[in-house]
Image (tube, rainbow, N blue to C red; front, side):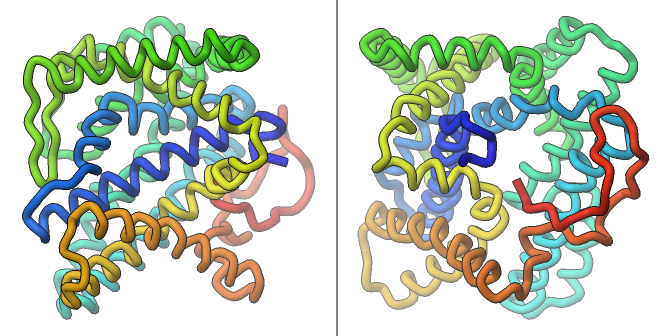
Length: 360
């Protein structure tokens, strides 16, 4: 069974999202070192309007199940849970990359200190997700109407918020998608279920959207660089928000369509373990990239990026399998008993002792 119950397409959508995220970091990092772009830069550009929004929209879909819990229970499952994995993995990445690879332990300590305030590198996603959940819970507790929150979140997204804080910038840009997933979860499931059972209509909808997206991303002009992509009309604030929401639904629809086929079960499984990949892909990506570049055996940036994507996705899953087999290092992907807030039994709260809770 899927970790999200019988709704397989949710995990498939998460699988698509994590592949796109790893692709972006792999392509940009190879581009920076190799000094040129590849086909993957164009794929990244095409998916830019909805790549991260879809990830956050999916993350908000099941928030309503637990938002009514007591504060201690909610914080344990939605705030401390994410921050635990952030702290563990930010320490690993900084110690290895800065302390060992760069042989600069003093700088590593400085990075560790700042990482508690400002999210480090690609781990900003799990850091900001904890604060998305916290903001939604505060709004729920204060009985702030959904329309007020949605309007405020939309204004934050449309307004080009640029501060010295990466956390504030990313919160402003992406909170709307998380909250839309939370508020409109029922409608989203209904739309996907309706189109999933009407294959011709679904294909027509996807063709129409992706054609419009292609046009708006690359028209009237775009700028592609080794580590960035500037959108065409799709970069216009309000239009960008609309395309992000529609694109997120389009990815969900694609996931729903492919999840029906057994030969795509690998995508469903990948999505169910997407947080494992997200937490662990950085180191194998960095090591493999530097190794291939030093050996100079692959000169094509596209081929090198493809290989690094495979390594970056598979390596954390291989590590996860070893840990599950041996029982050693489970704290990397499962939150141990000591990393919990003591439960106060209340509405929706199960009685009993804690168990290790997998990252999800």
